[in-house]
Length: 472
Image (cartoon, rainbow, N blue to C red; front, side, top):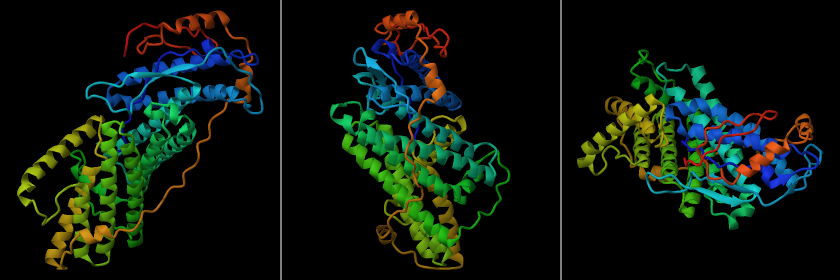
């Protein structure tokens, strides 16, 4: 957790070949330069091994933040809008064609989706902003991996890590929400799943569900205790987990149910589409299960704090059922040994993924939550057997009567960036026509290039790049 998105890649595109400006002649060429920088960085990022890609996210983010203001300035000019009250004249020579590789479309196992070419600047804007949202989500993943470091973080460090990850997820939510409203007009003509309004709405709900669970995780001591006990490098394991006040336990339960509702919304949207990547669909389903199981655990904590140990244990059994694991005393005990072996093997594999920093968290925290529930179940069963002997009621009626969820985050709308006045004024300088014409001539030959080794330079220097015909 959060989901490990794959960043899309794109083919070469020369805005100078498609447009010209009488007021700001350098704008199309400079925009092309920054796009080429982004394109090369995305290709290099795709080749990096999983454990190394996290460190490169800041480079991708910087390239996107450099490119997007220029791209949106082109869009504003084509729409007849001003940029900081300055008019930008832009004329299309021919309709812009863009080509991106979709990463959310379901494909045959072992094969990547093909790149799709579409006409219109809206496709370029949508993929650029979608990529930016995915980068924010991946940055949240990179932050949370520090919670499982060899040296257990302190409480203050843990809070700081989770707050930073939450901020990234809320930024991703704002971007997906913005794209959902922006893409509404193109749904009837789009066959690319990233461009669909409903897809972006589902991704926005997913990001909000993950951010809601982080609100709970920030003050939830039990996952940290379980992680510390399993950390072979940590010797300070004999700690008593801090107690959670009763009011907070009930609040956390309602927040977890809110996360489950957002995950359920994403699941419903993706199910209707029928074309979403299987790994993403499975992750969303597991996230909803994990959220509901966490809610059961916190309702159990609330009951245990009130002296109702039997009811608390019933809530934990309900939580295990939400996760898909057999609860104590349930039918199917003959399979318990085989199921336990499979679960232990899956847990060890997940631990190795975390150690390597690779594709961890694909189960949306399902196994981690099961460990917390098992720890509390063993503790409360021992307490109930020796001191407060109480009957354990059925868990089904408790789960069936859970209340509705509660929102904990106030999301802010995305504010599209604009070029500042000084930067826009520099675009009035005449473009390097000879160099631009050469780029325009290379456009057709490099349109299928996804693997060139050339490097684009910053504005003011040569923007030439070496393009080959290899396919990535």
